Length: 365
Image 1 (tube, rainbow, N blue to C red):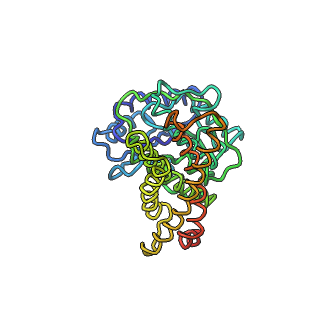
Image 2 (cartoon, rainbow, N blue to C red):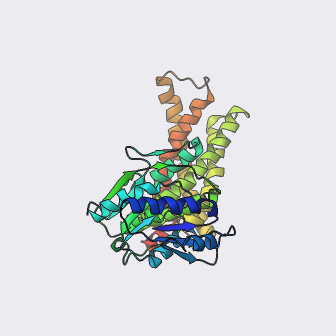
Image 3 (cartoon, one colour):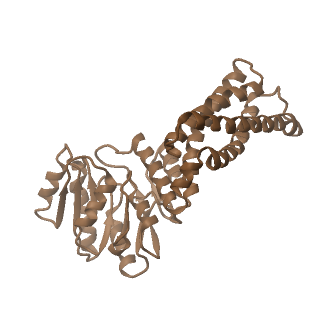
């Protein structure tokens, strides 16, 4: 069992007790590998103390090098042919280890995921924002695997699943990496109750979220190149949409700008933002800025014209046919703009991929 740690001293005693109690009851010969990233709270030293009476191997690392790379180090240090990965914060129930291991030893599966999202699985009192982050992250990985909880950090596998696999420890979701690149034919999910941590603080922050998005796009590149690019393009487009709608709403609602002029203003500001980030992140372009920006502007103008045509059609044809007048409420105009933005984004991605950033697309392919 591999457990990466950073400032988890307060959870370690209970974790060790529950892990070995669960394995002893199931008559499983267990080894616990704790990989500590030089925790300031003394987690590594405390793990060594616990190892005097238990079969515990402690790997000490020089600094906070990341969860995924810690798991990979744990794999190298582990003696067994069946590996289990879990968090140290007691959010994963150690009592589920025997069930997960038995599915592997019986040949039912080569990899088993402790799942919050299959029947019988649950989470403990998550706030709305955390639920949305988890569901959004799961949705991003939807086309990479059929597993319902690919974000789970609690999983078991045969060591042969990762033999020879080129695993890239980016971010904190090494389980998803293995699901995409591992050598297996059958995977199973076991329902778990995901509990809130009992001590310490969560390591999930904005930086980890961005690393996850980058990680997912790399995995899509491994399987389907165009979809990886579109995910980045869509993410940047989502930010651009927020900018677009904010400017559009403010212009129409507070400054009483005609909706077509508001469309143009919002489009120019948001689209410039999109170009900068798509050049730097989505396509990682090396071409000179000026000619590429001119190409992008040409595409943007075409997109703007398409946006104007779509808005005019929706506002002057579709909305009246539904009994929605222009004078009723500007919120209907925003809905119309959302529809237009989505359709125009598909156009922009296709043309920019095939023309503006064509060199980068061909090189990466």
